[in-house]
Length: 229
Figure 1 (cartoon, rainbow, N blue to C red):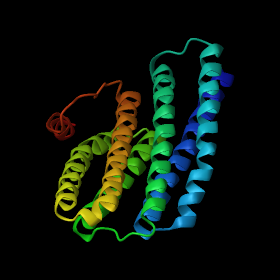
Figure 2: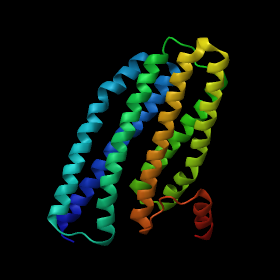
Figure 3: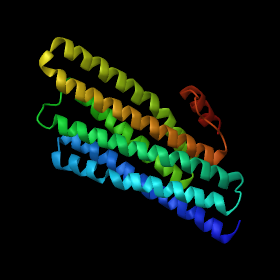
């Protein structure tokens, strides 16, 4: 591998790490905006999303440039293939950060429903951890971190179903709370989608590190594999 090619790969990874930092910051701050009903912070998140969109285009071009240098093989090829997918997932995480910020604006003059608030907070913490661990796994080439993220996804899915069910019951019994119930369901669904995207990134981390495809594997399968290693 030429020195120039190696440098290009490192620059590509650095760009992805920077974009990951922006996407993670968007999610963390949008969650803060929702829970604290922070109007100004929510507006800032929406305005700054263009930085993530611009970086996605820049990284796409960097991937094309790296492929144009020579025909990569083995781990280098896995990194480049995974980078393309991770780039797209990070841009979508940024989009969900905007969606959450928009929910923060919609909820700013309304009371957050206490009956579901604790579950929403738990979902926020899990989602933030999944995004952070998936990105740390990518930075350090740590497949174990990636697999740990995959094991958390079911917990987020279960919380999303519970929150949605509870809020549907509230809307039936308390028509006055329909608007904020719908918005909190939107918050829950966006968090669930962010968790799914973190899972996608974690799958690519395992692919890069171990050349193993883990898509569609059950949590039991993954737990068994972790025990065996």
